[in-house]
Amino acid sequence: MAVFGEPVSALKAVQRIQQIFGSTSGVGDAFKLKAGVHYGDCTAVNLNGRIDYFGTTVNIASRLVDAASEKEIMISETVFDHPDVQLYLDENSETFFVKESQKELKGFDDEEFKVKQIRLERPPMRLVI
View (tube, one colour):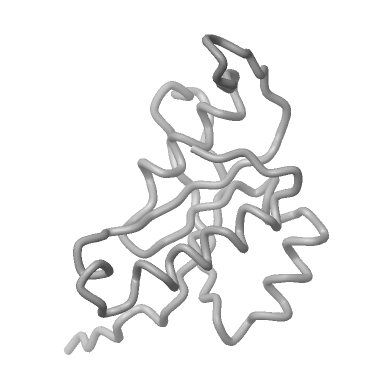
């Protein structure tokens, strides 16, 4: 879990982490990376010299990780609609492959969340005959 001041910073960090650990190096083969990014208010608590975060925003981000597939960044509609994220995705449209979907998240049974599934590589093509 990481905290960022702006959602575009989280997206950039995940992209860089996937580039580093998703390579075909000996280390990269061992990692199956996925990420979830949500944006909003949370409660920060300093316990035993450590800062920890709580609240609905944190829970949604955690559930987005659970819903993501390998090599995927699952972002909430709140993150996707942020102007800086829109600009970054537009500027990197050759790098990011975005798919819109709706997900039910554990602990939020009465809601369906509009999410964007972002991949850094083109999904494999499937031939159906």
